[in-house]
Length: 154
Ligand code: ADP
Image 1 (cartoon, rainbow, N blue to C red):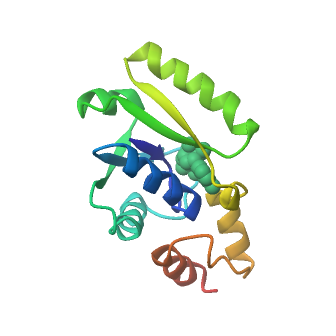
Image 2: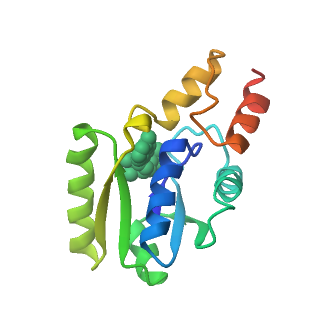
């Protein structure tokens, strides 16, 4: 599974999902729903954008999860989590999470180095740049670009 908030999905996420889909028989992109976080897009919209952006990949499905990721993994018979690493700063937290998830359930985490073209990309930065009218084409899939323009009126 490829978990995340995906608010919204970026080309960095999509690159990791595409590469993971070449390595595994089936990939579940799992959209985490966390009430406490301030989000631009509703879970349904985030799911829709991912579905449209991954429509060309035959072995990818999209789902949502609440609460503990490993509970979702166990319930869906998922044995591996794939995470993209953009920089060393991602690593400390992801290592800790991966070790915790392995201790909670026998779910392993595999780290995939981000494509250098996308290693500066995050959903929050994309939203910030788009809010101020910056050009984010090439950084997000087309369905995201369209919805961001609608939402922000840019
Ligand atoms: P968060 O869980 O902090 O909300 P995201 O939902 O944005 O983070 O990201 C989910 C996963 O995708 C994380 O493992 C993150 O490292 C990875 N990721 C995010 N942006 C990129 C990128 N540009 N390239 C590769 N991996 C990325």
